[in-house]
Image 1 (tube, helix red, strand yellow):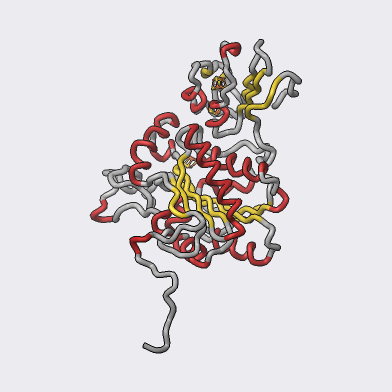
Image 2 (cartoon, each protein chain N blue to C red; image 1 turned 60 degrees about the horizontal axis):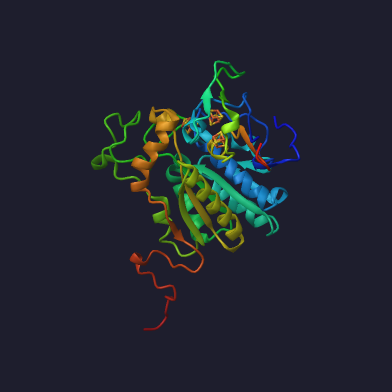
Length: 72
Length: 271
Ligand code: SF4
Ligand code: SF4
Ligand code: SF4
């Protein structure tokens, strides 16, 4: 399965990643991080295409994306 | 942060190691962070981390020295190109020297330094972040503020009858003979970000040939008073028409033809 790793303590809840995910997989969570923001989280990770757009637009450099080599 | 890579997956995106672990001080959604990352990625991809020296400005990016894992010198307001000139001229030629400057720094108090560094053809790369406002000091009008744009010092919108029109740095520098690269990109979309990175890479690669300048249209959600996701739309709608995304100068291209500069013109002692 493809993997999106969000560094929750870097996240400032700017929603840039939310706005570019074509699959609408990212949303603001109820958690609070060390800086007092509600970091984003991924739901339905099995739907992620590992396109990398969320990581590309994250100003905090807080997202890493890994693509599974085979389907699964 | 990164969990170990499983053998059955490949990296699509990871944070570059040329960025330090420092959390950025920028406001949420401010595209300064993207510009930092692109520069760091280019340094990593060119494998020049131990040969790169940055010069940081005054403004929101005054603390940028914390974020790049390369040697950095902090310059006085607007003076980064002058400081970079000194660094370039005393160090061996294989070094890479870049400045990182906002519009309040470069296009205002630093106008003299940038024009003359460009005109001397200093072998440096200038990364110019244009967000059409003074961010750090509280959202005042900048030389790049758009006609009609509301700021704390132009609360009814910039009045061009009183303050003139925004200064277009790329276009102005393009009247000079020496620069080898002058280009404008935008950080407002994934496509723009990828293109911006190519421009930064091109600038670093051409740096040892002469002066290279990359302007990046950037957002200031706080100063503009809108959300980060609205800010990128505002940028596309308002900034790009006035600041066209263009490569103005590439190797081989001549200065802006409208200025009718004849490069062979020399002083003659006799008629
Ligand atoms: S990698 Fe692409 S599909 Fe997956 S969460 Fe990020 S933007 Fe969405
Ligand atoms: S783009 Fe980065 S900082 Fe902004 S909400 Fe997404 S993960 Fe958080
Ligand atoms: S004031 Fe504007 S430019 Fe400065 S960090 Fe905040 S959003 Fe970015």
